[in-house]
Length: 479
Image (cartoon, rainbow, N blue to C red):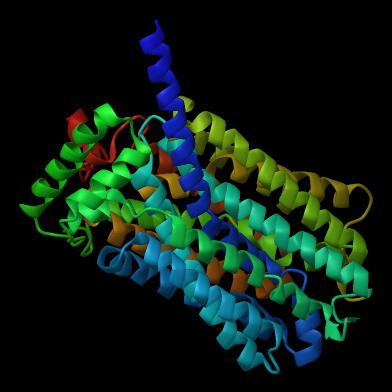
């Protein structure tokens, strides 16, 4: 009995240690969320200061996403060459530089350049964090730990919107001065703090044992493995990884190429999954919500408060995924999320169809403003509890080991490109017709439902070495 108790105690201790590693790695997700949403409170002030049109302001907001796409695309290759933790550190450096540069931008082109630099760091972190977490996590809790990436993203969004609100309220508006600097510039400057924290954590994290073994550093891998699994399972765990590496060595090393438009089918599944996560329009809520709620009749202070409350909801519902993903599985949660998003987005579109034009801007009469607000937040709930975290969980675990880093990089790059498309088109689409805009997002939510049913494999309870995904979406062990 005492031996059993001791074993359970050791298991809890190692799970606790791995959880701390996952939390540290997920700080990259915090940077991701912070950078994505810090522009929310600054966009109107930037438009005014630099005299931007709707299209130009859309590009200024979305410019970081171009850097994110490039950072995500190359991150996997860099991580395979230099290691996961070293690449995390350089991602933190890029975001640090971007925060300072964006805060002191003197022209639109200058701001865009610094946003691009930050995007490179954020895109890199968006790939490395889920890859690292999946590689150090026991399969029994891998889904839960991988969900920390999205939790960190939501916390970053909340921190950005909260700091935006604090500076805007303190100054009396985003364009007003605080300690001799415009409030919107302080919004960017705050990003220095999490970038320093992430850089320090990256230096202290142990390297992924899978990376170490792939480089022939067996003793180093053994040391790291001794920190994340019980002593009596170290050799077994190392042998399992080594067997996987040897098997992959006999295949076409690292090749993502296949007979489906030049790529392996599972890579396309990852790309489409990543694109649909953005095409439902989630980041419209976090990039433009302050501007949007002002446009339909809410005061500036109320719009900031609504955006902050929405970000709190986003954080809270992520815990639903964390506590259920390893019990219910990935696929059922995604199906529920797609259904909820479709219904809520359809209702938002209907609400905006009732808008009237007052002084050249849309206004929602009667209770329609409240209805739009309620269903917009239900959309956030549906997304935040399912598609938000689970896309990152699946991208981190659904690919075979030999192509994981590369395929994850491509999937993440596709996610950032889709994010860019949605972000840059929203100002134009919303200026044309908000009903059509949200109707398009609802349509993609419906598409996501059928896509999950048809193409997404269930990865719950499988080790990464078992994840030999075949063209039809089954795993090798289920054939």
